[in-house]
Length: 447
Length: 85
Image (cartoon, rainbow over all chains, first blue to last red; front, side, top):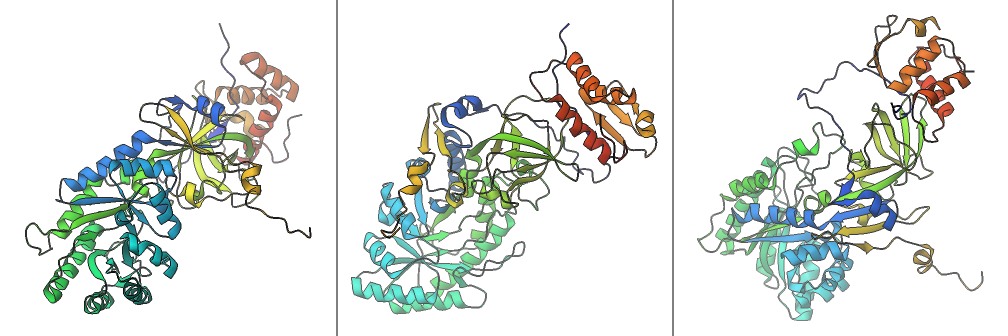
């Protein structure tokens, strides 16, 4: 009879109290493949760590969002939020599906143009709009969402100088009950700033106000927040119509829909807590029922989604470098992906599982990255089975922000791969190497 | 080492500590080591026991043994100064 396979000996103390009131079994399953391709094959071909994006999931999430709103509104426009992930291949999947671009800088605008998006299908948002940027984008018909009165004055001056009537939207911030107000972007609704700004645009006659925009916040788990926001936007639109006869062509309800990741402060995991796109759409429809527009003149509903479209499509494969026993008895697991590339670990408890079948008893584990920095903790507490050096783990729902906010630090940033809907796979961003970094360095002649 | 000797260990790896009332789960290899420690085996004997009972593939059994003993010390199941010799 063959002997049983050796496992590292483990003793785990039973914890009492603090039971999960929902009685959910916490069973962990390995993820050995990504979209049908074995993890081992991917690492052998492209190295570790490795970001992998699923085209199938990108398309599925996009269509789910679009359809949820298209079932409730006559006109819907999905704009792809570039800052979430502006790798060309990712952007092009969404543009192929029909998405416009939502950008917050000239760099992102250039990226969108590079990806074939016409200027008039780009919404330019955020506080970073220099005069040079506006001079460049206005002649191309880009829709500018005004953030503040200085920007409004600048736009009016440029409209005169360029002899244009730019199409603009007013960014509005407002309070809803369930989440902290984001007051720093746009004009406040409650204190009257928003209506003052709108009145000024109309009176100035140099800009054409065609839309209102509000972005409530980020990772909003309660769809009711959108109902309240939409109601307030509808009332503002009604007021502008009564005051000026203004019939807006779009209402932009922003982004902020949650992905299936889990915030650190969140009790339930993403698969239980994250609302469907249908629930968000239903809440918006309820709120926008307050809009008093003539039939056939309904505004286009604009969505500025990023995280909710791309997060679930992104996976990070990482390799175990070492096991440690920490002073407090917890196990430390050192993996080759740190917070510099998995930036979102600062606010998410990422869903991480082994990439190969495993046995043995799960232990409380702290997962560290490879950086020589104390803050390099990619998962601060997770029940994890025994792992050996060279084993692989898979972080899921990591497609948003990581490959835009990541930092090159002490080593090279990894390759990013896409697995196509038909199973083909290819690099969408090369792994860095010494030459990548030296290319932007200079050594002065005196050295 | 009396506390270790008093542990009740089931065939399925359920461990009861009558001194504290605490309960634990151990895997087969840890159960094997606990059994050896109760019998007063030394490091080389424990390593040989593991290698004999289980199919190994180059693991550092001595290091794994130290890791388990560290946990036993932390849970108070062996004295703080206990080392496998």
